[in-house]
Length: 345
Image 1 (cartoon, one colour):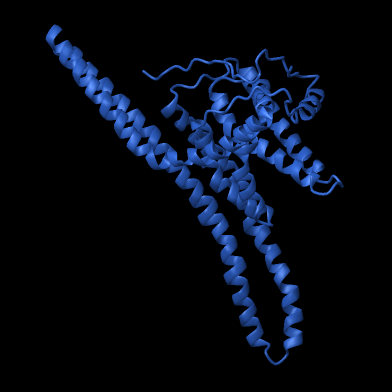
Image 2: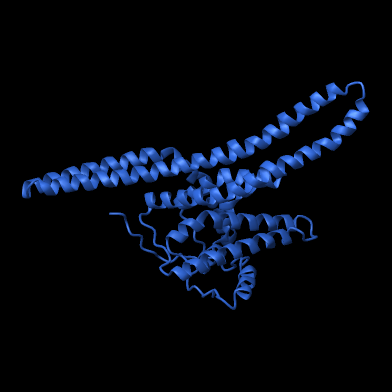
């Protein structure tokens, strides 16, 4: 009974944290001003103390260092705001807006004009329009939707990284990246392969013939995958390697299932894959901020949900000739490794 309560509590906390972290955009500027005012007051007191002991030049140095720190903080805060706004404008204003205009304004308008032109031959007009509508939709998708979708994926990946790095520097300090370049490249490539195979695995479990079981398992897969997406930027900046990130999710799966629920629900509402991708690209920057702000609930769970293990085994087999990622056992998997973050001086 206690295990069930802890699982429900962790799931609820994860869902709340995924939404609560979004509010960082609304109090970011206020928090920046508070930090800058406290730092300026400390720098002034420090400069006054040094003025009593030494000459003027050290105080000037203190003021300059304080100004540079303030400028850096302002730059990180403005970068987060600007990148989030760009993602909303590109994915919501340009991409999704063009689809809505075409589907609900241009096509109905063309249908009305075509019907008026062939009003005397209603059956012939309806037959011709029934052939023209899918042809026009196909042309629109090939010329506009697919190229813009591919371009937005590339641009979004760059903007997502900027949002994650700026938010991490603002909150935690300088990132602790994986020291080796070869390990960094191998970790990135292996992570992409694992995520792709995990997405395929979610599609396969959705085909289970048992009623509702396939849909529930697929939904859990997507929640964990979206949580991995959201926290991966933060963990990567903390220097966590892939096996550590996946092990932490598997042993604390109730929290991460709850964290991914809002994004999974919102992306599954549209029937179109393209529209679902637009919704994901609009909301995902906010969940990056939520993951950066959140402190996951660590549950001492005796039943880890090792859904990533099959895809890791397949990925290890595919990469066995070049590299192999070992899932090293963790003594206390429910507790994350303590990593010291270096504060920006």
